[in-house]
Length: 140
Image 1 (cartoon, rainbow, N blue to C red):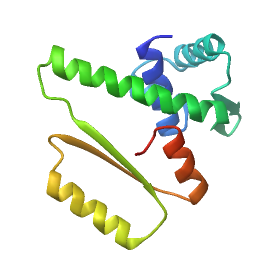
Image 2 (cartoon, one colour):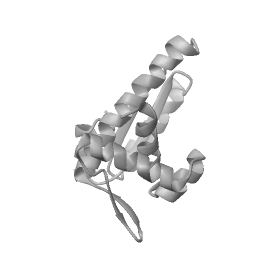
Image 3 (cartoon, one colour):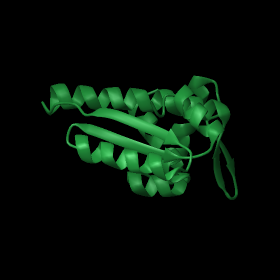
């Protein structure tokens, strides 16, 4: 599997549609679909369940995405450091239930540290998803 294939899979998961991801990636839908199938075959898992109404991430797929995100983040750090000679951004992700005080604290954190050196992610979700996000290294 290639870094490009990982980027494709992350984009599909982000937008929730192979067709929409293909448009955003400027490739044909069949090419993107074949790339995902090749990656699934190589990894020996099913990442997405496909149906007439769209795609759904499998349990194995969610775990795979956690690792894929790490690989892509590391590649971006390498590129920033050695290709573009920019200092790499430190990523910090938070998954939380819907509480106003956590949102306010997160906003203050972003204001205090800025986004030039740090990349911040905030995901508001339920308890089980929070635990999965931490387990799969989506959030810290």
